[in-house]
Image (cartoon, rainbow, N blue to C red; front, side, top):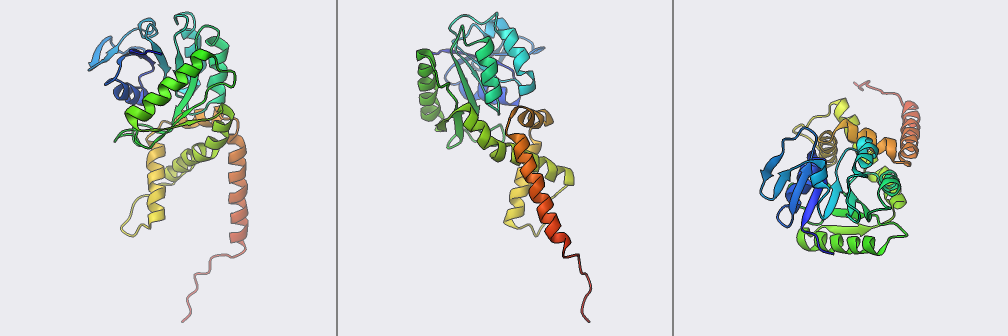
Length: 258
């Protein structure tokens, strides 16, 4: 497989990170509604959707809540055989959408880079990049996996991990949906650094900052489209209630002995 040009549909926070990361090795064409066409940076041009889809490979980098609509819009414009990857933070749902609208004419590869602009500000080294090829992957899709696995590991030193979409969503319901949820809650509580912070509290502050660096739409999308997130929240609520029940048996005693 030979890829010289990359089309990126969606130029939000992650689309910008992906474009900047790929531009040293590919000519990148990005599409974002209302973004004026023209050169944005070296090897990065803003173009129409149709022009972006004329690339050798296309990444869809739009919020999950817009994914179905965008893929339907892409379907009639995508040249037959053009590989399409997504970078959504859930995988079962976008895989179903890609299969429904695109797979009959083009190879697909669901992916999830497990990082964002904050965690990847120094590059992708040692960060996990998940690929979720289909069980019935075609020869072209297998070649797509091989190409991007080689590129991601050799050029960016990231850790490529291959798993099913179902396994991905089961795991990320806890390691991503949960941390994003807790980080948002901690921010809403209003925790702030102090001169006497324990290291464990510094981790909570970091969790809060990471969660707040992402949009509320991302949090909503993770929980709305990950089928295992409801179970996770139920377990979380149950355990919080259990701990509260235990603590309520020992009311605060602020009496000092004199």
